[in-house]
Length: 189
Image (cartoon, rainbow, N blue to C red; front, top):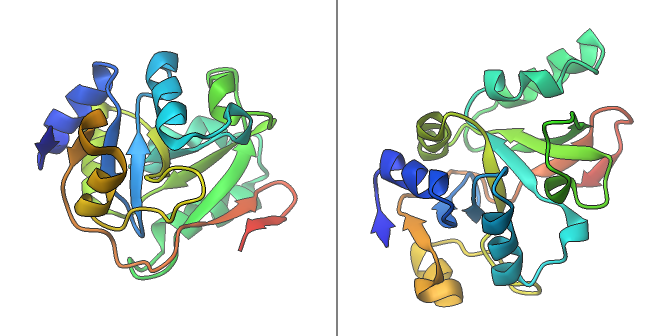
């Protein structure tokens, strides 16, 4: 199914479905992060090992602020500023944050931290708002292939195996950089 409604797409996620949707730079695959069956479907579609973990995408800082409490105030400010003071054409930043007990183990993979990004993409913001929280966000491609950059490319990869929220990509040319908030280590430059 293809929809342009963030509300309809959020209802699909709430009902355990997997969704392909445009993000800041590439198309993503998402699901309810607390639905293990939907998450396993993403791993199957991507041919991705569970050990790698995935990114959580939020539409606003308040949806993930509980993950910031174990950071010092200066780092909290740096993380929030990277999300809120970014021009849409700038590359997004995903932060590795200390995981709390509400983050399912399958989301983290073999890692003690969880990767989180607050998006500036209007359709992703609307999707997270309609879902009432953060969602899984991993690139829409099978292992070893380039991430989809259009609905047509995502459909070529996955055809009728999932649902699609149609819309435009953001203005960024590259997937988000990934930084460990506690150590400052750049995981993906």
